[in-house]
Image 1 (cartoon, rainbow over the protein chains, first blue to last red):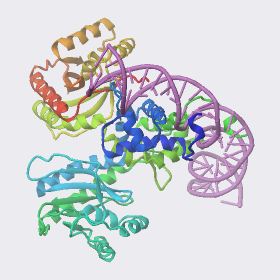
Image 2 (image 1 turned 30 degrees about the vertical axis):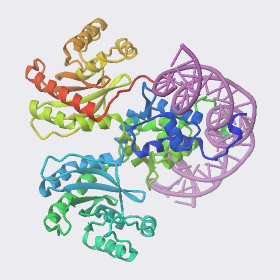
Image 3 (image 1 turned 60 degrees about the horizontal axis):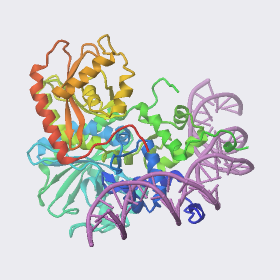
Image 4 (image 1 turned 180 degrees about the vertical axis):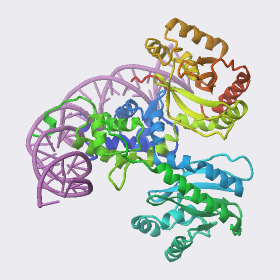
Amino acid sequence: MAGASHRTPGQPVTTRTLSALDAFDGGDRVLSLSQIARRTGLPVATAHRMLGQLCAARLLAKRHDGLYEIGARMWRLGLLARPTTLREAALPHLHDLVIRTGHTVHLAVLDGFDALVIDRLAGSRTLPTRHSPGGRLPLHCTAVGKVLLAHAPASVQERVLTSLQRHTPYTITDRRQIERQMAGVHRTNVARSAQEHREGTSSVAMPVSGTTGVIAAVGVIAPLTSHRFTDVLTPLSAAAAAVSASARDADFESAAEPERD
Amino acid sequence: MAGASHRTPGQPVTTRTLSALDAFDGGDRVLSLSQIARRTGLPVATAHRMLGQLCAARLLAKRHDGLYEIGARMWRLGLLARPTTLREAALPHLHDLVIRTGHTVHLAVLDGFDALVIDRLAGSRTLPTRHSPGGRLPLHCTAVGKVLLAHAPASVQERVLTSLQRHTPYTITDRRQIERQMAGVHRTNVARSAQEHREGTSSVAMPVSGTTGVIAAVGVIAPLTSHRFTDVLTPLSAAAAAVSASARDADFESAAEPERD
DNA sequence: GTCGCGCTTTCCATCCGATGGAAAACGCGG
DNA sequence: CCGCGTTTTCCATCGGATGGAAAGCGCGAC
C-alpha cells in the first residue's frame, strides 16, 4: 500500500513544498535531507522529492556531500526585495550617525509582529563593523520597535498589546502605559527604551517616512542606563530625515516604462 | 469544459509555480499579475493561484495596490546564502584594495556558466560606492571570469569553450588561445582581460581559495588599455590572500555546478 | 572483515489536488 | 454610462502527488 492512502493533510502541494524552507528559518546554512524532514514533519521520501524541485528552481543548492543550502538564486532575488533597497539607500547616513555618536545604530522595518533588523552598524569609536542583519526584535520593548508599533496597522497593535512579554525587570507590560508611549511617539517622533529589552542597554529611535507613511525606524543604542541621549537626538533626527529623503528617491518606480511582454 | 482537459505540459506543479519567479529575473522590483502571466506564459487563472501560494509562503508579497514584489522572507533566506557570507568576509579587504589602487574592484563566483558578481566597489579615488551586485559577467572575456573558468568543472569549461561569444574586436574567440590562458592562470595565479569585454576597459584578477579549492575571484578594473598593472599586482595578491583567509575562517566548502539528481 | 545503523534514493499502487476556460467583479478613462 | 484591460471566482475534468517499503550507501564499531 502506498502513501497516498493514509494521511490527508489537505494542504496545497506548493505550500507544503515551500514549507521545506522553514527548516532554514532557524538560521542554519546547511542542512541534510533528514534534518529538513524532521524539522518540517514531512515524510522523508516526500521531502526528498520536494528538495529536488527547489534545487531545480535553484532556490536551494545541493552540495557534493549531499547537504542542502540556500542557492545563489535566492540571494539574487533577495537583492530585489525592499530591505535591500532601503538598506543601500540608508547606509551612508547610518554610517554618518555611527561616526557622529559613536554608538551602535539600527535600521528596522515592521515584519509580521516583530521588528526586522535591516542593518546594524556597530559603533564604539572604532571601525564600524556590520552585524546580524536579518534578526528580529520585539515591538513593545525596543526603541525602533515602539516607533514601528505606533505606526502599525491596528490589527498588529492589537495583537502585540495583548501579549506583552517581559524581557527584563524594566520591561513595560502594562497595556495602558505602552499606549501612552505610542501616543508620545506620534507627538514627538521619538521613542525610547530604557533597559526594557536587555539590562544595561537603552535606545532611542525615530521614524523613517517614505511616500506612503512610516516605513522604517532608525535607532541608536547605548550601553548607559541613565543616559539622557540629548546629544544623540540632533544627529539621529538628521539621519532619519536623510534616510527618509533617500528612501523616497530610490523607492520610487512603478510602471512608467514601455511595456514589453 | 475546464482547463485540465486541454494542455498537458507534463511539468511538476511546484516547478511551474516557482517559474513565476522567473518573471523577476529581469530585475523588476514590482510586477502585476498579468505581467507575470505574460512573461512566464502561464494562464492568468493559474498564475493567480500560484502567486497566492508564493505570497502565503512569504517569498513574495502583494502590495495594497495589487502588485507583487519580492518578500522580506526571500531577503532573509538570501542572507544565509553563500554569496552573503563571502561578501561580508571579503568586504574590508576589498575596501583596502580600492583604497590602495584607486580602481574599481570585483568579487565574483561561478554560477552556472557565468560569473556572478557578489560585490563591486567603485574606485576613482573617491568614496567607494557600491554598485550592481547580482550582475553577471561572461567567463571567457573578463579577468575574474577567466580565473573561475580555469578552475571550473570540465563540463562547464567544455560548454563555455564551445560558444565563445564576441563582445569587442579584442574578444578572444579561439578555443586554443583561451585554453593556453587557462593554463597560464594555473601557473601564475593571475588572469587578465585587455578590452575583451568592453572597449577601453581592462582587468586583472586572482583566485580566492576556500578549503575546497578556488571558490571565487577578486579582480581590479581599470580604464586604461595598455596599463601593465604592475603596480596593482602586489595589493591584488595581498587582497586575494586576505579574502581567502577570511573565507576559510567564516565558511567552508564550495558548491555551485550544473544541477543533476 | 563483517555487522549494524542511519541516511539517501528509488519504486509504484492509490487517489487527491491541480487545472484553466469562462464568466463575473473591478477599476479606469473617455 | 459604456468599453476595455485587469483581477478574482467557479467548477467539471483528469493528471500528478503521495509516502510506505525496500534497496543502496557510508561509516564506525567490534
